[in-house]
Length: 302
Image 1 (cartoon, rainbow, N blue to C red):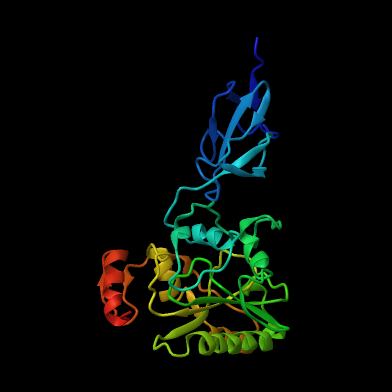
Image 2 (image 1 turned 180 degrees about the horizontal axis):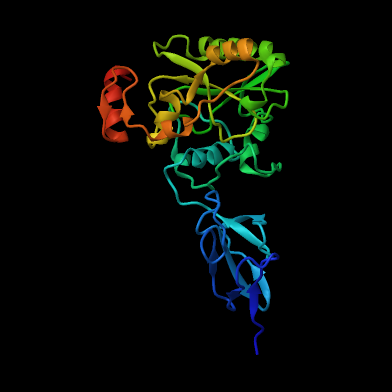
């Protein structure tokens, strides 16, 4: 007779969940587990029991402990293709940096979905820590000095897209204070230098700035050309993260630190990612990303 396995919550807030032998059981937010936190997916965890041992399928990556669930299980990859976090995981993937115009097939790699890197526990292997790994890779570096390093964004959203990162450990803009003011100014200066050194002959316009709610740990300055000519720019969230107030201009952040001593993000900023697609050059509304890209080609010819 085979033993029957059960998933039991320590605080007994929900009934035991039966784990039939060799059958996959998907568990997540819902009435069965009494989990209501929307950061937890309805299909967060898949468990499978073999001979009394709870194991995980290959597509599950990282051992986790959701509140009250006493089994070794692993987080399932999200299939949500319309998320910025998807690309954050892509940017954290190992490999060399990408030159403008090179193969961009990597842009379709499906990583895990995460919501908020500012509160979750950080471990060296977590995808949100990918920038800390990439900035140490000589193959990804295009410039470095005693204070900062510049790497190419592995999944660029335009022909030119670099990230300027300080060597100092600063988790995000929330951690920036007046003592970092000179560093922010230096990061901006280095960003302008990289544009001059690597895109000097180009007639493209550039912007330097930060995402108001970044998904990757370690503060980083985006230096991005305004053509947005890249297969990696796939959806509304990608576009709006660079073309609404979600994108904080570098100089505006410097002024904010000079004045208030910290960076303030307006309430409801995350909702900006849901705005309709609007051309950043002429303000025309476009119904889809393909039509937006076709429209942009008129502003920025090859």
